[in-house]
Length: 367
Image (tube, rainbow, N blue to C red; front, side, top):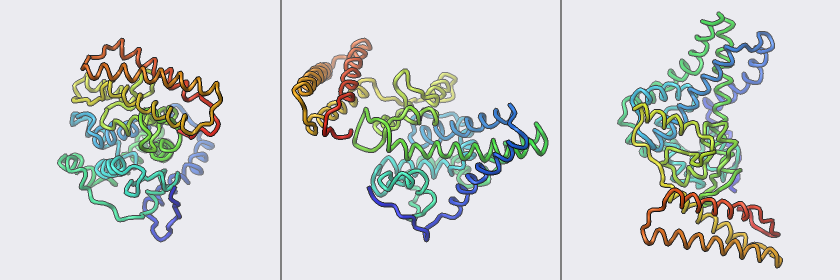
């Protein structure tokens, strides 16, 4: 891992002041407000609504629509996500998408804007607080630059962000409870919500490249984390996302929490989203199969095994080889795999994955 030393001569003072200032208010002014005025249902709902509006605008709008073109959205959906996405204080959709596309192209390398190899803090927020390099041009988002809504938001991003992120909840609070309500709306629906939402987003860049599983690919540090999925409206299945970045889904298994996917699907049914892109079940299965084989190979090559361990590994290897052979047969014969057959293959693979992960072999390498 590369060492990241804080370059005080390259501090991004505007961004750093905002991040530190909002955190300071969250730790001081918010508790004081709650101490004096308490928390009523209206302020709690205002926080929740603003968190959802701005949060989904990032996950559904900035990320899956603008960055990855995973689906095409009606102008009203684009407008909504651009307005409330600005309120998340994560810059414009144009800049966000440019940086995120660069992240996918150069993941774990020096040109990755939030390169995890520079450390957890750097990937989390250090890349925002310190300017190590000159800002690259927006040469990877020419498609977005053609959208006048995107251009308008980029031009007036700071004004829109302040009005939506702080002004709107303060105004709603004022209508509810006068100046006390306005202060509460500003602090809870504005400042506290901004800090919570931003760090949830930041954790995708840091925690989801540090902890979790890699069921689809180990080619990069991205990992799946169901905990992060709960905090980020389904964005925590990051290993899948890096392997299949243009899929409108992040959580592809029925039990995985991905409300962003559910909203996109609903918008499609309402005629507000179209051309939903998704990877075939066969391609997903093949990725899991290959990664399971790689994991087993690492376990075998880096382990000192007993007779019992060797027998267990041999059995798993034999079953995995049979599973691969069956899959190759379907593909070579160009046989359409039925849902029932694919379900059976997946259950077999899931069983093998569980056994491989449960192996406790001395000297086994981390996977």
